[in-house]
Length: 433
Image 1 (cartoon, rainbow, N blue to C red):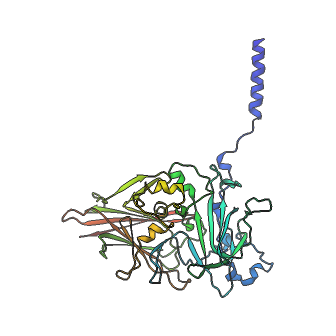
Image 2: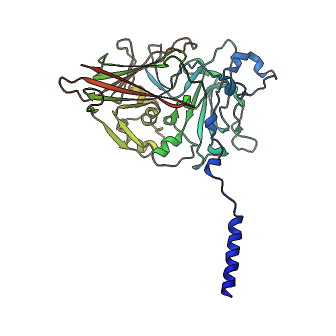
Image 3: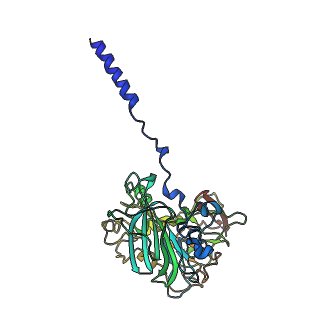
């Protein structure tokens, strides 16, 4: 009897086992929406087609599959890139720019603005009728909402007007948007009186996961800004070397030891990821000289606060050195962890970065003094069509002196990033006596 019962139970178990649904493997998940973003001005469709873009023949959406994906169109030229920037005016300092600015001409009216990916509305705010901001959430893996398992990326469209979407639908739920949907028209920056679209990508997941924390990505901070050029599609420049790298020991300012000067050639959009500088006591590859006053402090909401290291990482610069809002509980933690924030009371996210950026000129330049580094960028041109202007100079300081009689040799590794081709690395060496 027991033997017969055992056979019956085994048979039942086999039947149940073979009738269980198979879970989908992780590789079968939907491609993340931010892996295939399109440009927010649809390749400047209004400037190219005039009012014909919405006359019924082209529709009122961005047909990105016929423009961006096929023809390689972009929203170039970019008036301000991501990272440090300078101004032509004498009253403004070097500042850190957390997005890209797309200047829009006023001779053809405002330009339509489109959602760069599927998602839904997080918020719509307003400074004036022509200076509004739309924030969209883009969940991972085709999800409809942000969660710890499907964290969101965030896209921000600032200085827009005539918003075409509502924050919520008729049921009070966040409005769903689709990639290429017309969401607004361009407007004017109230602060700068400048017709343009300021576009940002934020990724709270990078910061949180590095610190060993979970996040849904629904809430972000200015420190979570990432370079949009790592997400938007554009053709890789071929032919001429797009980025010139120079190592120099002059000018000798504020104990600067050596400079790494980067110049982007015409037609190249600056997509700098990092600069790493090794200093040698003699020939390249010999004993490395150390950087003085180095420290690394573990953070609660940021993996670590690095002081005076031999790296300049553009995304990390904003993440580590932009404060959480002082109204946030995270700030109460961060102000005691980050060596640079101790004893400060920031009035905004730019407070610390910009208080270290002088408005006075030295040798024809203004410099930001931060993390034992001097930083300056060439002022942007008055014409938004000039794409050959970008130059960034980074002065590394606090390097241990070379031994008497030895060469002072340096090796700079410069990394740029392309959304399809990934990282490109360029290494330059130079020695001085």
